[in-house]
Length: 214
Image (cartoon, rainbow, N blue to C red; front, top):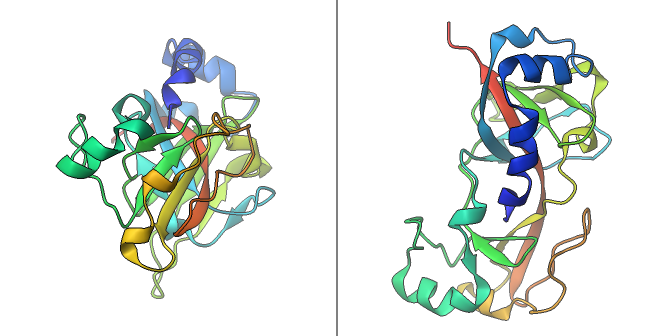
């Protein structure tokens, strides 16, 4: 995903922790002195856009660095397939691959999203605290957003991401089958279907702060 196009605006917005606190203080009731500014990280999330809390965070993932500059062009797929490793050193998994809105093949996020608190934003009006709870006995993780914020409020609308896995034979789900038209994908629109693949669209949240370590 070419997340790098949003990082300059986020970086200008987060010039200092003082700026961070001044900018988002109106948007969250959290004590921002308990959070430290970080280089943006990105959460791949699933859920109803209008939800303020829910189950299933064990199916959410985290990119702890911008995957955009580490991604591969679709026309470089033959080399990626042959080597099995991208120039950025991440491993390509033909049975579970990801695509972003500009048609770049990107590395998987890390699953599951660790339990904890995250200061999240959609790079729009709302910045607030996402709490991801530890797994319960059934393996479910609950999540909740502070201040009545919805998942849509903290989703970056321009960032699109989808996970592709085989719908039938494993070798039938290939980036080589990806349509060449329709990129970049319109904000909030679904990612393209790919022949032979099951597609799961994910929304993207930007993480701009993490709790200060005691």
